[in-house]
Figure 1 (cartoon, helix red, strand yellow):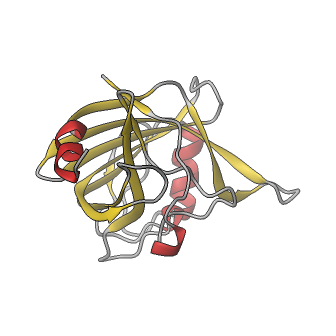
Figure 2 (tube, helix red, strand yellow):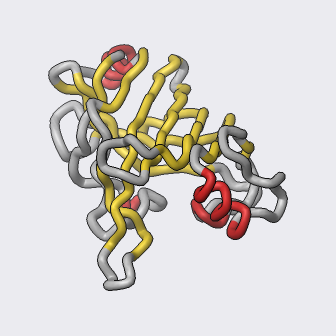
Length: 188
């Protein structure tokens, strides 16, 4: 498919098949990487705009939700990606909105300790905009939009993005752009 066909086929709503696991940049006391459990809901809105909602969980089955993260912004298409024919490099830029909602009291308590400057007291089920602000837990810098260097690949009715680096590095530079496919999303 051409890039324009991919962009058209991408439009709509996509969700995780089941809870997913990723390596985080946080380490256990023994030096091993802590797992990061999540589920994703993605909307391709047209005009290269997107919405992404991630629910982070404490357990691999997604039964103990910790936080909801909501981003909205633009996709910037950067050309073909060598992972598979029809895959494209895409930068996801949260240049419209970025919010965090604690879903468990222990997570709200952690945020009160590590992200209190410039924020109200963190409370369960109360979202706060972190858009354009410094937010240490996610490495966000004030005045800079969050952006990931990722990829998009559509195959067999599924949407693939890039698999996280096994050492927990984010997709924060072109050099860290993924080179493998992640568990896919399916249409809702």
